[in-house]
Each structure stands twice: as structure tokens, then as C-alpha cells.
Length: 449
Ligand code: SF4
Image (cartoon, rainbow, N blue to C red; front, side, top):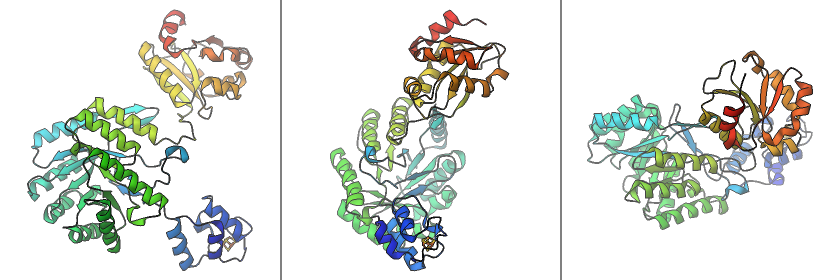
């Protein structure tokens, strides 16, 4: 639980030397409590006070990093029950299960298919992160061989799933360089798995039959010095598993229960008989409150909605989603291609760029930074006025890329055309459609150089 400013103040030197950038230790304490300052800014905090403050300021759910490379990700670190209270920070890792007895050719095919499932949206690459490799027959050599192949030949981060120490050791030897998650320590192997995780520095999942058992195992492992744990309450029945997710989050955040202050892992692949149902269950756990969710397969039609849901759930609701200001090329435009302009609200960009793409008319799309506001709102706020838009068109560099001097403004911002003409005397300001769905027709009917 966080300390108040006064509690923090009591641990500071109280010399008011001002070296931290504020005149008094009290002011610094208040800033620390509000998350506006870093403890390191005060060079005079004693080691003892530093340890106390670090412990007190540790997040109620520990952030745990898994994997290395382009698909490495972080889970946990959450501070609220409900997204609208602040935001959720670290998106649920999405994984797929593969059994260790898979033959090499089938694995190659699957990895290729799964790797292709990447989607560009609003300037982001949406893709799953994980392959969960499950030991099925205790054959440590084949487990290690498949683990090594996935680690070497794909970008996917690995979960190594076995309860046998020798199999886990073989898997770790084959892919430790990818920083896999070890799954799982149970009441029967907790000493061995805990020891292996400690020796290798790898994150460790803990599986129990109930939340009480989970607390016992978590306490034992943290007592061994392990910090990076991922919790599995063991339930594979949807209602109970969902209840466990909520109970774990609530215990960590509201009751300050450090034993449960870790991200969780869920297995929709073990809770349903078909991928559609698994997808629904995974959708539930992305919203509340899984750190990782593992499916039995990735198919575009099930994965894509989950990736979009994840994008939405883990977007800060207090900050509009934005794309970067600049010139966007759609369909390989040339010097005679149309130039359109709109705001940097992601949804606006997403819809307008999609419609331009659908029109099959290669075009330049100018995106103006309006702090994430849509066209009408930005216009009303003075961030999409004629002089601002005109100045942007002038300085963004589009004039060097085209022969003509025409720019199409959104129909809803038609009233800015007069001011734009003053700012851009050599340009023709064209009024585009109000509705993005009419862009294709508009270009067909109106675009001539
Ligand atoms: Fe107080 Fe430390 Fe800031 Fe000096 S640097 S005013 S001792 S908090």
C-alpha cells in the first residue's frame, strides 16, 4: 500500500537543502506520494529509509517481464480494479499451446502460420506473443528439441510446461536465452522448481488447486527469494476461474495481499471444446484480469478480435488514441495523387485511411496533431482552424512530393477553407465528403489534376 506524503516525510532527512529541486523535504515528500518525483532525486536518503520507501512504493501487483526480443512483454503492474479509475498498463500476453510430441514438419507449418498473424492498426503492430510448449510424455529430449527449435526459429516467447524437473531443466538449457516462463511450481515440486527458477533467474508460474493453496505456494517461493511469479489458481471451470481472477486482483489491490500481488495466467484452451468458445473465454480474461491467456490454436478470425479487444482495454481512457503527425502514403501515391488532410485521432485515421485504401486511388494523407481530437471537436477547440491547417500543409513537406497544389479538407471542416486560402494562396482548397464512406465516390467524381 502506498505511503502518504506525511509518512514519507518522516523518513526523509528534513534538512530542506533543496537539492531535489523543491525547497523543502515536505514538498518533496508530497511529490513522491503523488508520483511526481523519483526517490533518487534526494541524495541524502538513508539506506534504511530507501529500503522502506522502495518496499512501500512497490506496485501492489508486481510487474513481471517475460521473454526477450521483439515479442518480449511485461505483465502485472496494475493498480486499479476498473479501467475507468485510471488505466490498465500491461496488456495480457496471448499464447498458443503446442504439444512436445509435435513432429518437426507440423511445427514448421504452425510457426509459419502463427507468425503471419500480424496486423498493422493505428501505427501499431498487433500480434500474439507466446507459444506454450507442453510436455506430454516426459521425454526430455524431444521437449528440449522442440523448445530449442521454437526459440531459434521464431520470435515467439516460450512458456515451458511440465511438472518434471528433468524435463524442465532440458527445456531451459535449450531456450534460456529467450527468457521463457517456467510453468509450473506445484505443491509436489515447489522446492525443485523454485530452486531451478532461482538458479536461472527465470520467471516461474505457480499452480495450485485453490487460492488458499496459491498463497501458501507463493509465500514459500518468495521466502526462497523468488520475485517474478505468475499465478494460476488451477480452476478450469469458467465461472470459478473468473471468480478467482477477480478475487486475486481484489486481494492484491484492496487488501494489500502481497502473496497474491502477481500477474495471473489462464488457459482457455483447457476450458472449452472448440476455438470459438475458447476465444470468448479469452476475451473475458483479457478484460478481467489475466496476465496471460493461452489458446489451443491461432486463427485470424479468432485472434484478430482478441488483439483488438486487448488494444482497447489497455488503452488509457483519459488519453485519446493518437497517431503521429505526418504524411502517410496510401497505395503508393505519386506526384499527381490526391492530398487529403485530417486529424490525428486514431479512429479518424483508421476510418479515413481504410476508406482511401478501399477506393484504390493512391493518395497522400496528411495527419495534423490535434492532440487526439476528431475533426469537429478539434475544429471547435481551435486546433483544426484554417491558419493551423494551412501552416501545417505549408511546412509538412507535401509540396515537394506533388506537382499539383490541391488539398482536400474534411467536409465537416468546410468553414476553414477561407482561412486556408489566405494561408495557402497558390493552393486550391477542395471540400471533401462529410462521411468517410463517401471518399471513394468523391475521388472518382472529383479528382482530376
Ligand atoms: Fe530534503 Fe533530500 Fe530534498 Fe534536500 S534533497 S530538500 S534532504 S528531500
